[in-house]
Image (cartoon, rainbow, N blue to C red; front, side):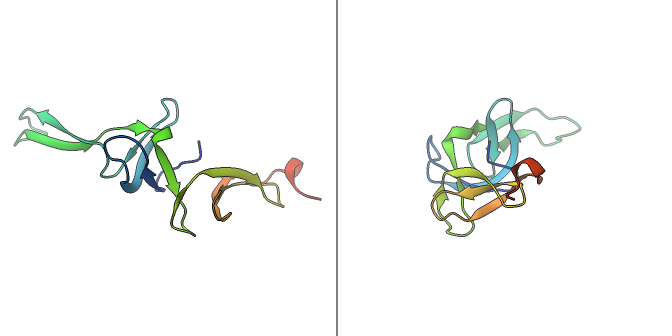
Length: 115
């Protein structure tokens, strides 16, 4: 799973196809994530001390991880991502369109370092 919190993603399938937003949370076990401003629904809330006015509350629902693509910061396009090892043995994500690195996945390991 190459998408993390605070990444910018583009929705490629579903009712909100084409929308871009920031990832607010990721559920690795279910393979779903919540994107800001995407898949909004209304939840009807009864009056209570916590919500004194009640009414309709708009909130984002989780969407499948396979329905989004990471937006590369270097080329500003939605693209697939891959993983590669750097010379020091650390693993990073990279954009498959332009080849730019988009963040480290794991710390350096001597086993994968180039000699």
